[in-house]
Image 1 (cartoon, rainbow, N blue to C red):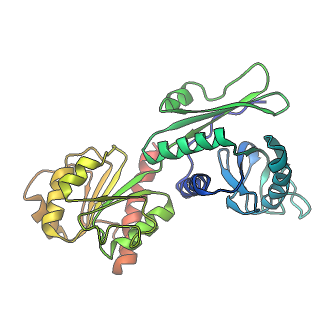
Image 2: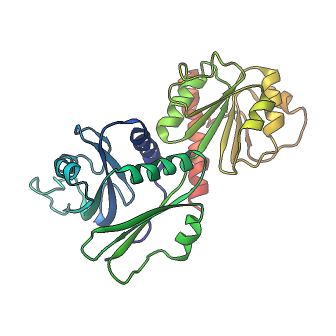
Length: 333
């Protein structure tokens, strides 16, 4: 038996992954990680999908449209006692309501690993969480025996992309090796913690972006006003630029509504090698900010797709639509 790598999770699954890792970090309950390690045929979710099962029966994330979760929770009651990993196979090919697929249209066989989270695995998962939040790629490998017993696992930073490209399927003498590449969520850096930033932050996080919110006003840029934001940076533009690190895949939105602060922030970031810099405001205002300076094709103004948006919620939709469009283009190459 063998399995190749699963490629980075879709945006819709990224926030679920971070939520699972957050619960692992903060919960005092015993928990078990369920991972889809192999799919033969079609399935609702693919390899690499995770679900967390707490001893209370509560779950975080999902493995299926709802047809497997109850059975997995029941199986985990025994695993909380034995503390031993277990591999379970579900045949979803049945089209009647008596089968696991329950008529949902899945036409595959799912192999799922259930791992009790001991202290060693917990440390590895927190390492994964910290790495993803800091923009690092992690290669995760699990080695199994012929009878699908978990023998070992590892989480390694950075070198994953190279390994995946070189060897899509790993053959070993006895058993098989599961390989998955965890890639960090795309980063959206927002300068400006005004009222109209709230729907943008909420929407971006819900979609799966890691949101860094920046502002010089601590009374606005905080968890109370923006409970879903991932990180906060307080200070004037130059101080913020000294604190943050940016990559070529990051997205930036400037929306403080303060002309001098927007001008200073734009001056500091305009030459940065990022995927997108969007400026809220009219074309006339943005050209005043630029003061005739040349700019690269990663600068977008007026910000957002032209959908006739009115109000902060609709403007947030137009901004994220433009960002998603660019994100998809770069990941389809």
